[in-house]
Length: 234
Image 1 (cartoon, one colour):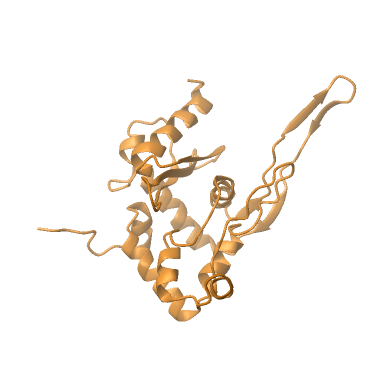
Image 2 (tube, rainbow, N blue to C red; image 1 turned 45 degrees about the vertical axis):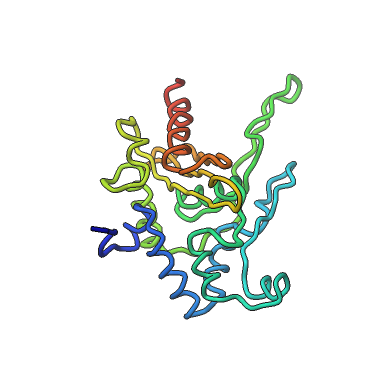
């Protein structure tokens, strides 16, 4: 007999990576206002340069009605929004953009401009430090943000979390999200993006392995190795 997720909340949908939950969210947002989802995606830094200095980072793509009419000669349909709600379709994002987005979640909606340097040392001028630069604040309520954070902890540590196996026995609490980005001609790209420790974040790590398969099986274990190297030096 076929089974599914059953009755499921939005938070559990994120923890369990249930596409159907977000199909319904995308459909509902489209019916309310087709611009809502693209506008929120851009508010978190998708579809535009991160503002990093010294690197020509790609802007990615957040499709909306104006873009689709210009690029395809047709309007944005509800199916486009359903695809967008799970990050598929015409959506394009770089690992750097995703790291900025994850940092905003870890930092309680504060979006920072990525920097390459933390400190420069010189024998003549001494140390020059570069303070973190706030770009803007994401328009999300504390209640919503807390639910997202708890859902991401559930991904790594919950009974039905998609990355539970990868973080079994880990010595710190991880908040993250698996991702499996479908491609046209090859195996999907494997993603895992998250931060740790979840209660007092120190690091954000984004793993994207091209054509490697499932994010939970391929990218999440690599995230764990990188985090353990940071915390334990192993």
